[in-house]
Image 1 (cartoon, rainbow, N blue to C red):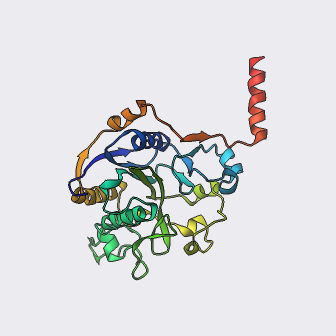
Image 2 (cartoon, rainbow, N blue to C red):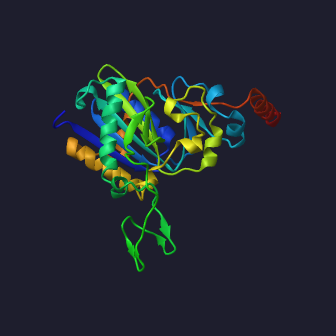
Image 3 (cartoon, rainbow, N blue to C red):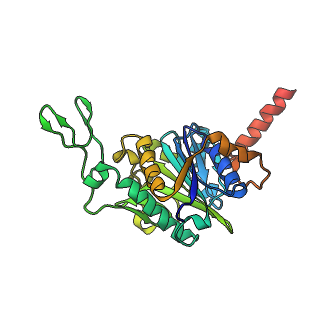
Length: 297
């Protein structure tokens, strides 16, 4: 692993559906190591794992009413709602670029260690602060002093709360999920990508159904009660990205690459298993067909 080169692509507001097509192309066609960091998606949508069932995991009535696009990605993992407040990070690596066996669980554990180091780069996290607060004068930095003296910022986390891997594929802090993971493995390469919640609106979770299969630590909590967000510890998505980049630069020879350089692999012929799904009801599909027939008359 020592001296391995990694191409780093940093994006802001890149459409997550297009990003997934790029990642599959890099996975199947490139022989280099890539790390992609995207601060939010220009597209709001739902992304599902390869085996996730639409009827089981989506509130189809709301998905249809809100016209939320749905994509099935090329990796496993669960179903997530994503938007401009989601931070996406992806390892697209050769197996020999990491110091553990390239199997699902060791990769999960290794990436947990990488991100844990990034979290500990945040003074707020090491102090146990869980929410950056605001004073009457506006936002207050951790440890900042007002004219009245020391300002107490945020709530304290439960004692001993740590960034951990729980329930096989979830990154958590304490008993709350902050990121979900998915993977694809080939003979010599793997993809491990994560969607972190930088912020969220609880109403967005309404398009997701309560899954039948849940990790034990979730304890049947609602989506809103089950998650936390990165902005509890990092003032901006960029600051979290900088912390992760800093960890990678200590481990690898990192070379910055452009989005265009990564997108070039879309032109290489390869098998693609990403797909945008039509989850409309049969009644709605028939209504649209009838409307199209009427227009053509």
